[in-house]
Image (cartoon, rainbow, N blue to C red; front, top):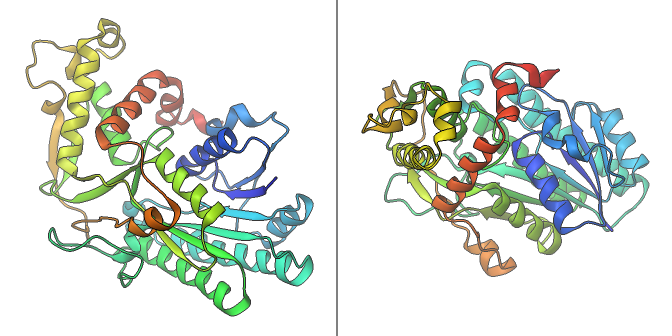
Length: 361
């Protein structure tokens, strides 16, 4: 039985990971630490609060005393570190929070882990798994090979720079102190519980509410899209089979331009409305509800000025995790996007509470 401390598990990827991990490892105990900042949502894990295998603590990863107490009280043997400020646009307008959480917070966790596992309990069977991003590698042209684990770091936003710094700290604690660590750098995630400021949920909800679908620049920026359960599956493999000190890139093998992502999403939602008069009644402001509108959801596409420092392309080479650990993503982009659209249509109460701000209560 493992005893995991999962940071940031009220957020998008972290909450999906907790649900995934318990479904596949039902005997393990999970302790969650989350500060419940704007993107942290207690409702993502509401159904787990009364489970014996689950404990939740509202608190900040920068609180060293709190982290130390959780490691000791619950005899934690594994930390899975998701907690991060992660929205690029927010990092451009307010980078301080990204430095504090992503760098100082990660270092606080590393200090506590070193003290607990190396200085105090002398637990050799420990692991600090750090969840990072492909944005630390910078940008690619359309013809460049995909990012590998040996690609030099070249972050282009305050968010990416803060994550790059945290990656280096994790590596340093392994090589300097002997802390057992692994790192995974993932491509763009999508799926259930995705906060509505991100491209896919933003556009999906705007379609339902008849609002513009903002496309930066010409929409030709390319991202490798990873369904969130495939990401959790990759992390599980790294935790169970990965080599301490190693980094593993986790990708979805799904490179799409932003404009193609949005047009595919438009077509999926159009199809849902065409097969369900009830949806037209629920969302009368959506162009999908107007069956005389031949463009349907695509009529909402609106091009806006590009954001500063917008990277052209991200792409992950996942050969290492595939060959060494047997990782294979199970969702192609179309199947994953259909699942995502259906989840949002089936969970209006979840996203409506975010749009009106009541999820904070």
